[in-house]
Image 1 (cartoon, one colour):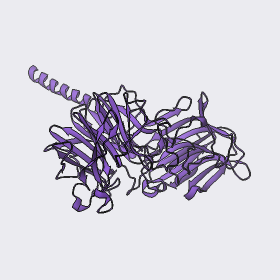
Image 2 (cartoon, rainbow, N blue to C red):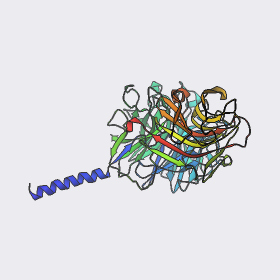
Image 3 (tube, rainbow, N blue to C red):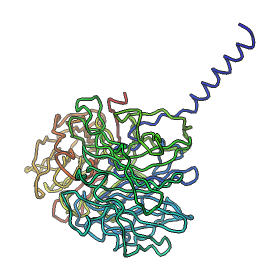
Image 4 (cartoon, rainbow, N blue to C red):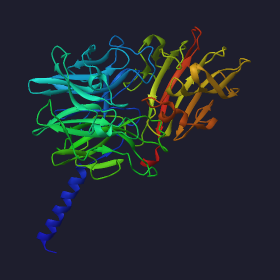
Length: 556
């Protein structure tokens, strides 16, 4: 081999290695667990993403990334009870479908507070906050508002009523637009209809929602979800030469859906839609969207999650995931990964531990509002006061949660708690909504003997005791509790000696906690939960650590 040929081959191999070194693999979902209705913006080299939180508090997490793979939560948009609270609301109400925008140095988030004042806007100079108090937009009647800035004008686009409030069929909606003043934060009284019904109203399309407008080249693209946020979910696109239309649909809509695929396919992803487009750091386009990972049929407990897929432009139309029928669990890209953010993983199999001796991070969730009076954090752990409120009600119980982010995995906690009253309980709950949860806890039985118990929720605040066992070994000492998820089932364990786990009950019905069974729009959360069940008390429980382990088979 000549020296010249050798050098050419070496240079070629080096170029391959350089390309490989810069390749990033985007793993789906990029935000695992209950992170629905994603919206994203790019500001310079930075990306910011928000999600729905419904009646959990704080509301609307905001994430930062520079590579679309590693995401760090930098705050929450609704983080002060003075902004709003969700007292009296069921967990699946509250805040629906936020959208994030940026214009002239100001960040904007628009959202819907369902059942109350409706659509609002908040602003911030720094996306980490603080965010302003909400300004409501009474003339914007509908849901899912987003903003679009076009030269010297701005608009708010949203899902609105059928024309003249006379729907032709169930699910008949419109996409409407009002002019928006980004300084006064007001919307015009007049609106215009951009889309009536959906792509083809003769086919009775339902629930056109989650709209956005973007301008690429000479075209204005209006894209929105269609079909309802379940197995028929999809994303469709229209375009126009003007921001105000008329918008014509793409002849090959939908540009994203998983409906119609074989139900028995391996590791399915379903219910894909509610997308938002963004240009990646590699100059290529990507879409983030919600989708779910069912463990069989349409059963899933992890809620609607945030996924990503590449976008291909075909005849100046954006098409998502065009090279595959099925959404992939990973995509290779030319994006250079940034590992300097110091983020905790949000995708693939990951585990973490939290020592509860310092302030809670942004990912912890409370129900409906934030009240620091019932818990304290010190060097020896997190102390929670037992409250009369229960998680079966619509108040603010002593409940601090983390999302279930894997179909298979576990969360465990170490706890100290004593009582001589059967109504006083402390432990861990796996919670979907007020009528769908399991609670493993320490309490006393009718003979006032310490016991570990497992309850299943019922209607109207009722609970069923599934099993209890006496705690004869070290009854006043520390107790470890663990909940293990395994797709369609859960197992509940305890240990009176660290690490020596005893199974209280396994093969407990997980479908009871699925969205398919429980309804609504949220996913399951694990929570530290203590209650005196309707009675006043001064008793407390102390938690010292949490350990979370994810073990989904698709990532092994």
